[in-house]
Amino acid sequence: MKKCKSVQMPVSFVFNVLSLLGYLDGHMPCHDVYLLCCELQSQIDEKLEAMQKRDVFTKYTVSPVGSVERENFRKQYLDLALINPKWRSGTEDLTV
Image 1 (tube, rainbow, N blue to C red):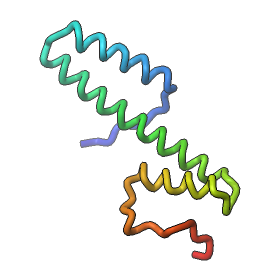
Image 2 (image 1 turned 180 degrees about the vertical axis):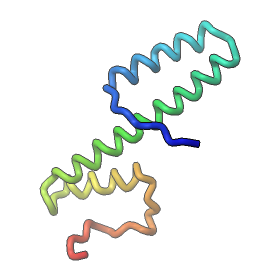
Image 3 (image 1 turned 60 degrees about the vertical axis):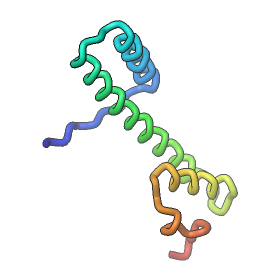
Image 4 (image 1 turned 30 degrees about the vertical axis):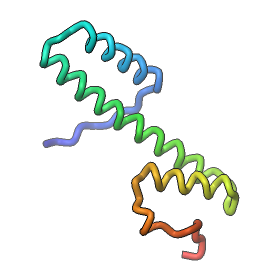
């Protein structure tokens, strides 16, 4: 399957589409429409997760080196990226 090109979209668009899907789900019982809504919901959820990960990573990179804030953003990003805790260092190691 060919990979589709990614595009950026504003958060307000995502929430408007979610509202529309909620309306369609309650008023249109057609099975095909339901499957389409589920697929769209899944794709939107993936986009929101990617946006959240990117936001946390950006906050990590712009935080002052060695600060508690930076370390907290690093840990939050590792959690969002589903990095196994066994593979993580206790703190950020700048000597590598």
